[in-house]
Length: 281
Image 1 (cartoon, rainbow, N blue to C red):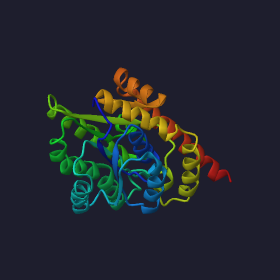
Image 2 (cartoon, rainbow, N blue to C red; image 1 turned 180 degrees about the vertical axis):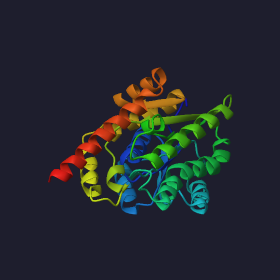
Image 3 (spheres, helix red, strand yellow; image 1 turned 120 degrees about the horizontal axis):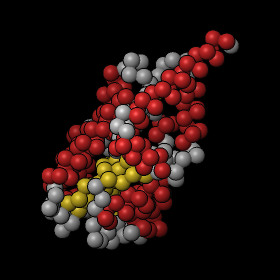
């Protein structure tokens, strides 16, 4: 997009993490904002951060997995702002469990948010994006939308699906005034690990604690947001965020089977090590 000033941007999952940081980055560049999340307290905190921006901000409690709520959200944005130019489908959740241990209910819950939330966002806002002189869609995939990893089968499946949807949609919109960018973050310091669902085995709480601690040391969300805004400005097809995302993407291109096999062997080694430790305790 040539211009972001005085545009209207919609951001889902805006109560924290990449969503909040992207909202701040877009406001800094002159966008008015319609922010959505199920976490009303977090939304209020995001809005408070933006009060000094001088931009028009609306917040909306929305479950992105609910088709009716997303349809109503679209109408609420139009009623509040009258138009829309940028859509950032960011809302996402995680489930940390092996495929065998993970319930179908958890699989469906994750897919409802991570994939169907993106589908609904694109479907309901696209007709209104077409009415703008220029517009852009950002769909947040993941480095796990590039490579499948253990303990994340549903998350990987949803992010691969977002990748496919985004690439197809970009191809369909080639030659129009609407750009589509698919974003592949690596480790970013968000609340996704804290809010994730974990397996029911005895080690689940330990895994949660270790994962949450690990996420606090990752890339600040503001840096991810800056990369996303650059992607919008440049109409980038793909935005890779963090060094590991670039490394994994390169490995998958050069050695397609090696990345997943290496991750699988590392996971199996750690699992066997934990089991041996447990037996000797």
